[in-house]
Image (cartoon, rainbow, N blue to C red; front, side, top):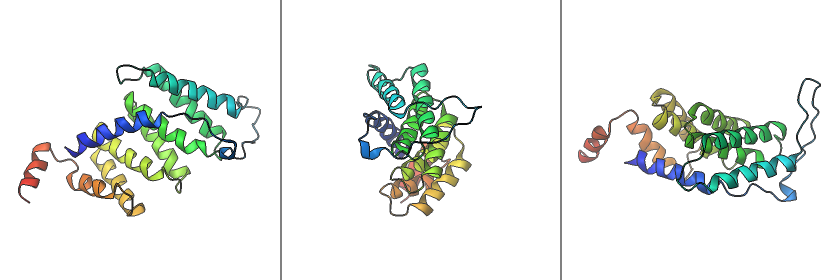
Length: 191
């Protein structure tokens, strides 16, 4: 029951998170970085942000609560590119979270894990780092059925974010990891 509720929460979060990606001038940080001759030219920050915004808008237009996989992949790629080229920009962590959520929606779970991991390891103090770590664990748990990895990341969440509003849910998830729904119900009945 909790996994169903959290899955619904994840889907709702995706659609809420696909809000506009435009940012105010104070959101822009130092975006000047040198490129080497072997790299492609660095895209303009505002052009890339506008492309991402357009893709997010196109995804919101979906009428059947599903994202076109090709559109989702392009959105994810552009978000990752933004974070790669503009790591100091305050928009980068939020885009990594949105990219991970989009990857879950189009069922590209390893890509989702990559995005969530990038956010919480590159931006460990960002306000969305705890969400990224939770979603990383939850993706291992519910989508990949990799309970060992899920438990590892749930426990890391508990250790790093003991005051997070999601802590009680995470504690329940850890206690019930790899249990069948019947086992969970039986456990509640025995309490």
